[in-house]
Length: 179
Image (cartoon, rainbow, N blue to C red; front, top):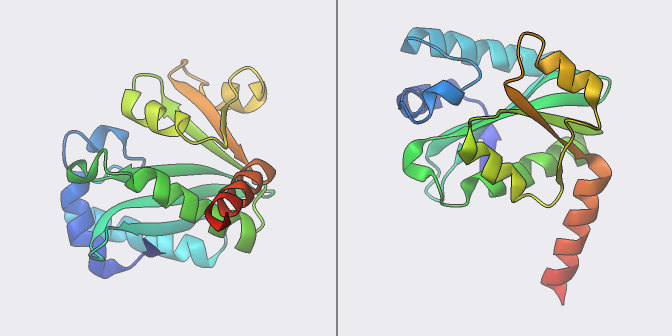
């Protein structure tokens, strides 16, 4: 379902990213394939420096369908950015990718908090995050980060996933599967 970023996937990912239903919501907007290739090389380097984590989301056939990144990692916190190609909308890939990514982030890399900033008008992403039982809207709770992401104007809602909340959810799901 997830794999480390690989330059061989860039062409497929770039094509999916350029879709008008996807492009406005992508964090690193690239205007040409060469720029996307360069950006991916930078992400791979940043991961080696432990300032980000970036994974390619794969479908059941092993084809790249999107990306999921944890960026601006500082003091065991970071921000999440995810996008999935339009042909794969509504197929459950978002939740499966996040569950898998959070398992890696929280268990292998000891991250404590993951923030998600979602544009207030991005209804698709808001619906997707609200389906995750371990994610919490924190506009009024984590006011300092909320103000930071909305310095110029209030265009983002702030969600967060805490390590303990996710692990509690994971253990509950494992228990339900076992019984």
